[in-house]
Image (cartoon, rainbow, N blue to C red; front, side, top):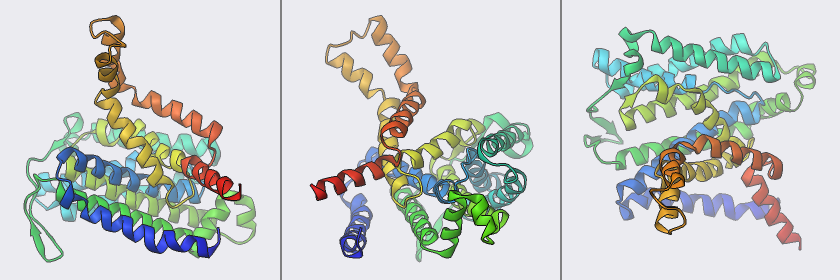
Length: 350
């Protein structure tokens, strides 16, 4: 695409979309709508963070729940044990996640391909089991519950009301925008070119003098930094964390899927992936499909099928994700964003 054609998108549509998002809470006060938007921002931040190591550096980590959990536990452990505000504890969690990334990089970057994927899963599971077995610090399987958050001074204004979703909306929007800007900066820097060279051919990149160890670790550190920020944000928003919510394997898989379905190695691919997966997940969890089938008369509520749908469809999001991934890999190898771009290009040429 020529720079002329890109101009309207970069300098008109993106600021317009950002302005609309900033004004959204002023026109939409519905808590559920704000909740969905907050989940979209969180998923975007997770996907963009993974995209740095997976999409640009080509290292398919499936253990990002470890960094997410480190950020979440860092934010709440210092508050519950020492009374330190989570606005400071968040950075301790981020530092812990980056330390963990250095350790994982030192161990796992000696491996390639599927061995690296398996090693990243194993390390994340070790972190989860460690949290489960250190109840004095993490409260083990019972998790950590926080009833109230201390005031936050932001832009000279003290925020004390965290019962509203509006503060979380703007914090989530800021996090999503920060990760998108970071991804843009990586893509358009020498660092990003090194990452992409490693992704395309590690041996060729090494022969050109690119340090594989250094740049893989830098990509993982950046990715862990933003993933831990997302974990801390989740902990502050939900105010309850335990190993099954912030450290499970399926969370790591979902983070990867956001980027793969949207389009890996692109700036806006994770945004598209979040727009696909978050509404789909919410529809399945709230059993809208089962209720619609029953209300339309296609399925009787007291029939075997009706009972099965009401009991199990809400937990079928992982199965639906799997089917969606198969469809994307078969028919959209560049993700939904790449597929849309091809359609637009084909239409413009016809």
